[in-house]
Length: 100
Ligand SMILES: [Zn+2]
Image 1: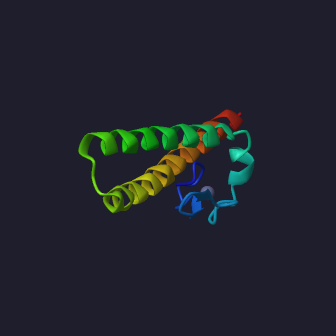
Image 2: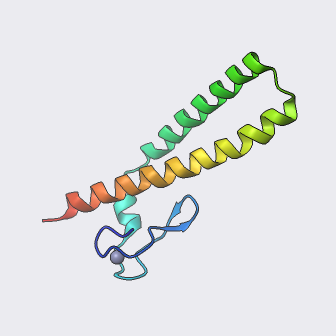
């Protein structure tokens, strides 16, 4: 939700911020600037998931298609969720910083 007016929603696509609030016009892109470390966090998350997938593979030895069927959606969902979470946190943080 928008940190200024509370209107839904910060996002225009599953993992992408809208450019501005559709209600009050608050510039989300300006607030997001500097939040590039989000990409690093996403990489780390992906790395953890890949490690988990490999560990599961060692442990259970599932058929390959099971691995892909399970980890494909899990990875996508986790990354999208994490991106939304981090971007929201960042925009709120930046908004509070920008208040007099
Ligand atoms: Zn707003």
